[in-house]
Length: 366
Ligand code: AMP
Image (cartoon, rainbow, N blue to C red; front, top):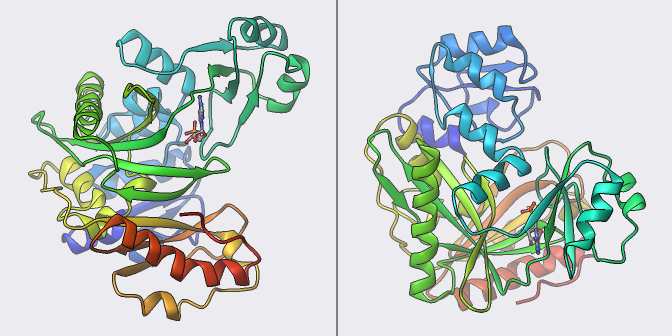
């Protein structure tokens, strides 16, 4: 989606990805199929490019540093270094005074057992590295067996954090350019199922004051990080209106996909503008919208019949061209625009439920 947008804006694109059939390859002028730490591929990518960015967090920071020695890389590799590692991210938030869940770093079963004693209620054990979509996480409580939990998570370092009784999850996307100007999308409201984003509602159904707090918080984080590019800030909203930062992602974000239809400037275009030194675009909402992720589970009986979806006014279907549909794998997404959020959700259930039924899945909850 980033490459498609760059193409529309007149750029040529070089892509590095270990997967020869990666979704960006059909729209790239040059596809380098190599691992993210292949130094000769990294050199070729740098030679072919004026500016390099990334849309995935599990890239070795050293690889970005190699490119940064001769080309502009945005967001700066030091930002990825913080955001790709939960422990560093939590330490950054804490030392900078940003609100986040209480946490302890643990490196053994005995440390976990000690840490569990300091949390009165439910907790979550999260691997420090390589976690996404709820992967590498275990819900625990004070009575949990720490030896068993430590064996199950199987990582050298982890973060034990309090379970947050949030009333809503929201995210904010902030773009910042090299001149220090920031533009923030209004907050997105997110619902997760099994740790994976199920839907995003835009604009989030929250009071204006909370929306403003969330946007201010995202800008302050972006400034503190020295961001050039795009940053997603995932937040928990508590019943008293307080916000806690769950995660930071220095890239385009799943919750921002619907900006392609719902805003004059999409998150993809905004990232390209920010990293290429162009003026940032207008992000005022054009329309209420809801996005549903299309997971591989929908392909259980083969490719779903998209005809009724395509016949729905206000529906935009995005399929990523991934060759293999596995359960939980994001294969595409569906955005529905309507005159109200309620109507967009209704249309979503109406179009998605027959497809879900055919795949043996329960209907969507409203
Ligand atoms: P993550 O990969 O950390 O974003 O976690 C995936 C999802 O798990 C989040 O979007 C929340 O729905 C849930 N989650 C993660 N951490 C917590 C927490 N500390 N308390 C409650 N729910 C959480």
